[in-house]
Image 1 (tube, one colour):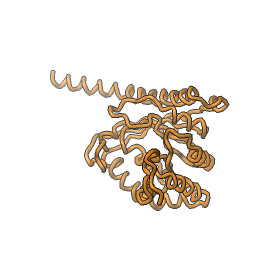
Image 2: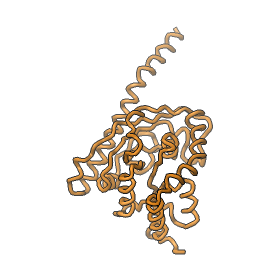
Image 3: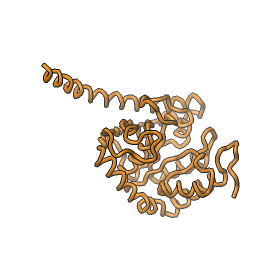
Image 4: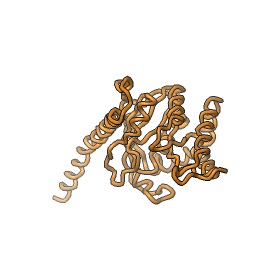
Length: 266
């Protein structure tokens, strides 16, 4: 077994193997079957906790492209919950998401990470021009699959939107997908940082799907830092618009509740 390089912080041979294996089972036509079998019980548990116990409001479900349409789902990032909860809502529709290559330091942990994610996550070497991962994403799109990316790169600690990462813009430019912007709220309270499992008692949460974005105006432009940043900035503007729309729709209800409380006190 090859030891992880301390400089790279991941096992290069393991990362290359996982990317090959993911592509192979997709081409063999068994990846969706594996996902259906392995992810089913987890999706049921997540539905019980998040959709039945907590209550997850879904807005803009009509904006989700029909099955068989490949797209990138770009979502703000506030907790561990977004990817599994969105995947549970889409189930049995296959759902893929990249994870940082640093998760793949050893073969045993890499195996269990693949098993836990129903063999539908794949490593991406951050800070590198990872054409193998981009090639896998391109093939997923061509086959009508869905891929989740977090344009902010890391979780927001206060729930506010962070600037988009240029690296995500580079991936979008290289894969040239249809992009579905998504705004989520409330999951940080349901699955707080530092907790291995979600809480059983927490406020409700929300997922708002925006309309698909056509970013094809960038495809003919030579990839550069400025182009990559412009792409991810445009996505973040749309996510911010979804956030403002949610807050605007909820403002009258909150104002009405305040007035009602004031009337009771009088």
